[in-house]
Length: 50
Image (cartoon, rainbow, N blue to C red; front, side, top):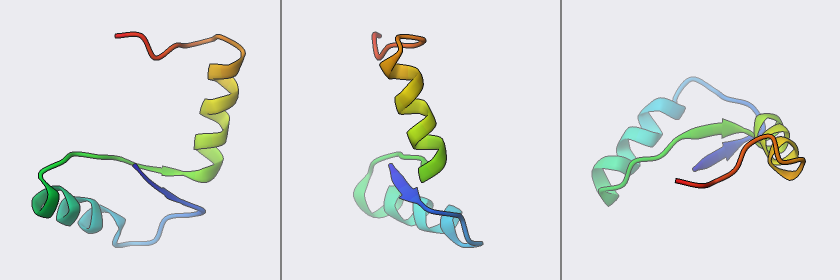
């Protein structure tokens, strides 16, 4: 996962390049959204179960 304070125009191509070069898939998430997700996880509103 790439995390950014904010997104600029080329983040999609950067993720695609990482995918091609490393053979992995990923996502991009703004820091503010990441922190919100952590808070939701901490209070038990979702889990990481499969």
